[in-house]
Each structure stands twice: as structure tokens, then as C-alpha cells.
Length: 437
Image (cartoon, rainbow, N blue to C red; front, side, top):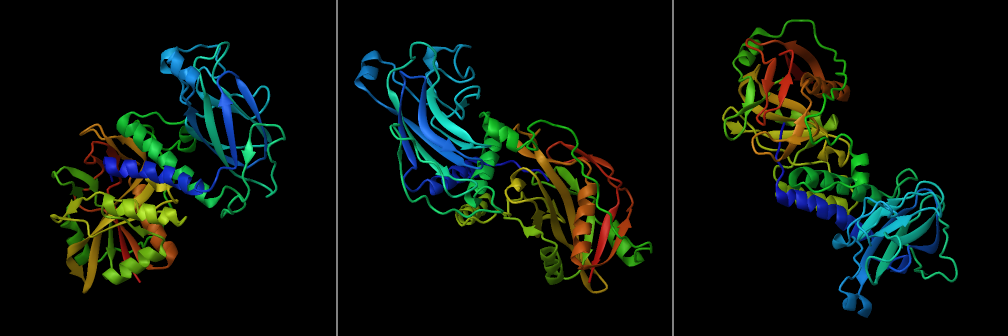
């Protein structure tokens, strides 16, 4: 399956990511600082422990000196000040707000106007201005920090005499397995996904953390990421001749709204609509949202309630001259933004032994690629599409809802083709036929 993502959905993903952060930051900050541009490093007096998460927000504080000189400080740095290899952080602009977690030897981190920092091990927070020698700008930064504590609940307060002021009453936060808070996991995952989308769609840069957190979100053609196909218990007996004849009459591929041929038809399920929906639910498949607008609302509501959003919208494809009746998907929470198992199904225009027949096309999204039709971002499918066909069968078999499975090779099988956006795929050409209990 391929899908080009619209600007509203991308923007909303970004807003959801930042909005969850704002939700956590709705209370007063735990620490506030005034960081002067005249001092390279300021010791905050804050000791940190393994698992702590810091959310840092910074803004410029205007001064008369800055107004007079015409060069006021900006947490993101000064673009007109040039750059230099002698800066504490050579990759950042001069005058930018930076941080480090040890007194000596630690590499500085760019904070800019805001950043989330995950603390790995014991640390001590220093804030500073990216400069060496004379400051590149005049003024100071107002810095606010919200801290979610890892490990034990007891934490360190700023040292006496520092220019930090702490706030009491840190809000209790739900955690999973004693690791990152739930809200932090959701915020981080959605933010990463939004950055990946933005990078591919609009050329915006990804943060270092986003790149590290989403190695599967490949914006180039990449290499095949096929996983071993699950083992199926498939019947050795011949498929019913009447059902074979009906399957032989099926279109081999689906198409998009422009009649471009795309994904192959690779499975058939026999059973009533009620039984197929119950089987897919038992197999942990989720009905996909049908529009970006519905997806936006669902994502906002579910992430606001710290739930997992599992219904990423699915584009419309056509078979029998009409759009899919249902779309289903399976993925880890939030990761489905880049990677998911999914398929579409259509009710066939025929029955078998009085039972409804459903025809499906399944693929596995493994990252992102450029749509060859328009240059925008689209999902990239695993070109070994038989893996998804067998994954669908294995999930139904594991759920106990499948009675019998068959492989069937129809006339003129699809073995090499391209989907609607131009990416190639390959198959042994067989359809998986599933008879439900």
C-alpha cells in the first residue's frame, strides 16, 4: 500500500507531539534560570539521575544594551555572526543556548528554543551560550525546565546560591514498567514521527534524536527489509473446484483512483461479514481510519487520554469498480506511522456454498519513500509481498478462527509488478485461501 500524506495530517502529528509536551508542562516549571550571554557556562546546581527527562524551554530577554548594539541574543543563535570551529558546539550557530551534563569532557547539546533531554546515568546540568571569547550578542535567556524523575522519587534540589528557583509539587505521572512515563513515550514517539514526515515532505531537518529513534523511517529507496514468513499449517488437499473457478475470475491487481494498477490480490477469506470481523478482532487487527480528518480527531483524543493510536488512515484503492469495504492494520503503537502490517478487503460479487467471499490485498509498510508520481512522501512497502500474505494467515490461524488454509496458484499469476506509486514487488503468485470456522 502506498499513501501520500497531506499537510494537515503532518502538521497535526507535529502539533500532537508538541501538544503532549505542553500537557505535561501545564504546571509551573521545576527550575527557572537566567543565562547571561557574557558567561560561557553557568552551573545550575541541579544533579540528575538515570532516567530523568528534562523538557527545556528558552526565550530571549531583551535589554537596553542589546537594543543599543542592534544584536540581541536568540536561543536559536545568531545567523549573522558567522561560525567557528572554536565554538563549544561547532555545528550550532554562535550565541545559541546549549547544555551539557558533566563539568568536563561531555559533548554540548543544542537546546535552542526548546529540547527534551533523556538522562542516561548520573549527571549535573550546565547551561551556556555557544561562544568563545567575546559574546556574539547582548542579553540573556529566560530558561524554564520541567523535570520528570527517573529511578527513585527523591531528587536533588538546586544548590544554595545558584540562580535557579525550584517549584514544588511535581505532578504524578503514569509509568510503564518503571521506565519512561507513558505521556513521555507518546510525546516522544509522535514527535519523532512528525519530524520524519516533515523531513521528507518539506525538507525540514530531523533532530539527532529522531534519526536515532526511527532508523526504519527511510526516505530513500533503501534495501529490502523482509522478515521471515511465518509458518502456516496449509491443507494438502485440493481446493474446491467451484471456488477455484470463481477465484480464477478475480482481477489480479487493485487500482488507484486514476486507474493505475497497484498491489496484487493475494488472499481470499470465506465467511460472513460478522465472522470475518470477529476473526480479525481476535487476531489483533484494527480497523483503519478512512480519512485524515477522522485520524486527526482520533489521534488527539486518544493521545490526550494516554492511549495508543492504532488506526492510522489508509488510502482508498479500488477493486470490482469500487473502493475497499474495510481496511485493517496491525502495528506497535505509534510505530505504525512508519511501519505497519495492513490490508484492504472487498466483498466479492459471488458466494461459495452460500457463504460470502472476501478478496484482499495485503502489504507491509517498512518506512518512507518518495512517490515517483509527484515527489511527495509515501509509505514504502516490503517488496516481498508474500510475507504479508502469510502474516495475515498466521494471525488468523493463531487466533483459532481459521478452519482450513489453502495455497492456490491461479492462471496468469502476478509474480513481478509495480504498485501505483512505482515501487516494485515480487511474489510466487499464489493466493492464500482462508476458510473461517
